[in-house]
Length: 139
Image (tube, rainbow, N blue to C red; front, side, top):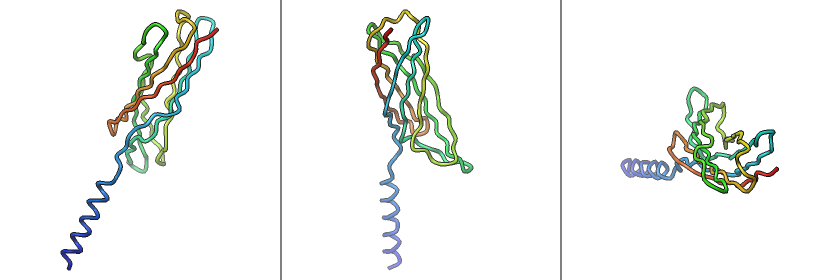
């Protein structure tokens, strides 16, 4: 009887541990807009990251996300227009983090429709995701 109960407990533990979802970073709500400056444009872009892994250490939760942003112009693609890494610590687990970018682009870029492509890597779970958003450069 004891052996049967022990087997049942072990089976439950195995099932629970196997059913635990692994973190998977997800990007959502990408936004981008540009406004004219004297000698070009200022581009502001954001995207929301969620589902990333958080490490619990000394009563703080840590998250680490690397990102790059490409810009697709009417003529070509500019790889790594911006890049960075968020290494954040908080007292409570977070639902999401905002990735923000502010980039000045010169007046050599023509007016028209553009696209930004966000690439994010959760440095803890090694999961990746992308998001795209269109914006216009106009006088």
